[in-house]
Image (tube, rainbow, N blue to C red; front, top):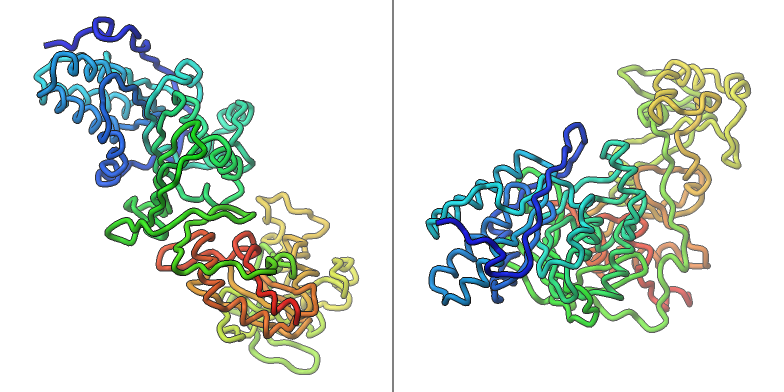
Length: 515
């Protein structure tokens, strides 16, 4: 039996199938979705009537989402009335998918054909499906405002990793959610909302970074003002795609309904816990456990209001500049590098701490950094550095080729003996509290020596007359741990990012400020 033409059951014709040649383009980010996640995501759709419903997957791949939808429709048709069957048949005919991978599109069409043949005994030509070999970003306007449901797993790839012509086409495409080093999946959120009718539903699994990073700022604002998050399922630090280091969430969005109340869940390893809620800070959104997050104290200020937060020095050639200390005397420091031991002038170096490995205020290894700068952080003239510190200069000169290779060989040749970035050269000096950029729990430590520099982390330097010890206790408190677990990027094994953007909004006790 051949499926009836849609004209006999629905006044709207299915679209003409589109084929776009994408050979030679660098389309990345294909991550196929585990079946148990697909089943979970489709429950809201399957909980409603599937008669005369239009569904689209804008990055359908081999049909991970569309195949179970077609299977569910076919099963419902088996026991349906004639009128119900007509409505379900209309839905079946209007199943729509796009993908840039031609082989995946062919496999998807074949998979859908096999399902209707197996369950309903119908024969059907693969070409009859509205599964298009095309990039949905190029053709979405023809389907704008068409669909009741948009589902899927959009591509996970940064714009800068695409080929130049494709990257420029996206940048000039007028996408409102596009910001700087944007990820493709964020643009697909905007695409999905364009494809939906008013009150239509979007269900995507995507990286959870849009909740908290700068690239997701416009998306967050749009959802806050224009659309509703019906449900959010956050996988936290669980990586649910085998072999892929991606931290994800499932977003169920209702178009044009900003007053929608959000149900927020976090995955615990075997189930979703529903005791969470979405909270906001100036830097982003977080998934909070109300049991562990205490109300903000009255009169509390944010950490950024009372302190400056800086990154450490960035040499872009740590193996050249940062050396292990073996011994020292009044004039020289004996260091080790590249299997060699040699002296450098004591006045040409500074003590340096590696924040990412410090424990209880101590670095595992005593290190120095060759410091070709004056007391104000200005790069010394090359001839002056060579004359005053010939041993340190000789070591850098022996590694000149490595230093010039920084920034893919475009490094300023006149400053070849300086650090890779000027950031941190001055701000890393002075009394400070330092921390690694990633920790399983708060690990802030005082560095009282103003001459000691640091790298591989951040420093906090109070602007007000605040005792460093008192501030340290605040930063290492359970409140900071709860703040980071709510707003920061999680990592496998219970680690979290302690980057500036995540700690700067931490509320500091008003008692500390008055002190």
